[in-house]
Image 1 (cartoon, rainbow, N blue to C red):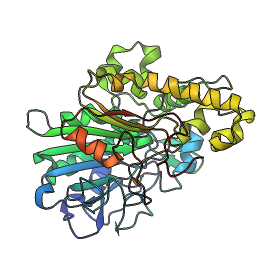
Image 2 (tube, helix red, strand yellow; image 1 turned 60 degrees about the vertical axis):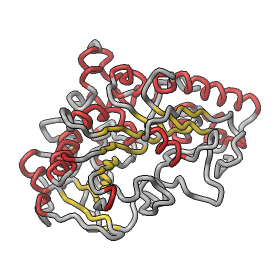
Image 3 (cartoon, rainbow, N blue to C red; image 1 turned 120 degrees about the horizontal axis):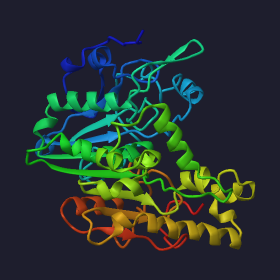
Length: 388
């Protein structure tokens, strides 16, 4: 039986302003459509109502938090806030660290007065799984319904005014950044036939199909397991999925393979030396790189040469975005970090690439400028907050 938290009916929750993000539990969609978290609880998003010039403009941001590619892994995840909504507070004053994309300060974010929606991540498959039958694991019942959760949120927000938006952005970080690539066109289709300006902003979501120094394809194996276990089919970019042969359909979980099919402009906010990738992909399983992967300042000259090789290969993987003829934008810095949209105003000297901050680069691209920024090699940018 689904664990439904019948604390409110989502269609009756009013929008509020001020400095508070209010939780909306999608209890109706959970009960009627089976749109639930891994543990069967109702999914949720937080919202801060737009005002002034931003009252008809919307950002839908998908939280990150990795993936669970096996049933046992998902069973553990179901006991946390990444697999259950039971611990989500009714409201909060900050989303992410609060001084980036979700800042309510005009000097920090160009989207300060938009309708800001933060989708909590509780499905484990980048809002994309769609397995009809629940899975039993010991005394737990697990659900893989991220695609239904995504659509339930879209339906609810459309009814609350997003359907009449003049501007609409889908965004996300890490697993949520990957979800942004996957759902960019799905999101745009919600506004088909309307004059809405639709764009996508993916933060740290470009996970490439690399072979690690230990000889394994870590992300490929992870995605293959995830796609198979959770029935990630309709949740993928359908143009990509339908074009790929059966053995390659999992590739549509990779931005590099789905981008040729993408119709909607997307902005990649990305480190060219992503810290998650250096630890969990490039050098995963290689004990000789254990320290180097965590902290580049400890790398030997020989190891640093390999790091720079991965960086160059990464830029080549980003070519569908960096290509001057594409409508996409990019801010690719050389800081050893992962996820940046939540804290781009930290420190007295904000990170800059070619004179642009992360906020100004995104805003310039959104307003129509061609912005495809690639930083100098590590450790050449003095505005990186850390040299590790």
